[in-house]
Image 1 (spheres, rainbow, N blue to C red):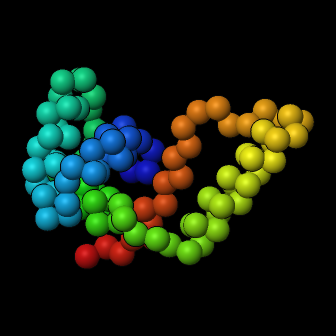
Image 2 (image 1 turned 180 degrees about the vertical axis):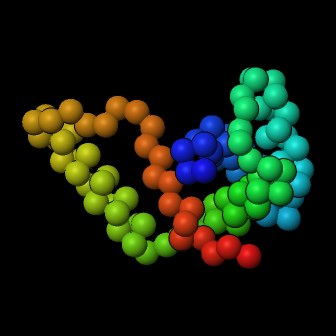
Length: 105
């Protein structure tokens, strides 16, 4: 399942500001419409898709200390690379998917 939801995660991060956790069913409908339009298939049942969307929307404004430490270290490393011109900094999007830290209901 972890490798199957990269497209969903990208869509949800793009749409997260428009929906609250209480609007998860409406968000699921919009996600399904976008996936159908782009002809992308996901191997999730409607119940697991709703659970996934709800978990992402509930955690979008959260702050998890160890994750913040990891991202701070990564960002610091990239800044040092850019300043020293010794190595090539990351020149793309970085998604660190750690949905496992969000509690299942």
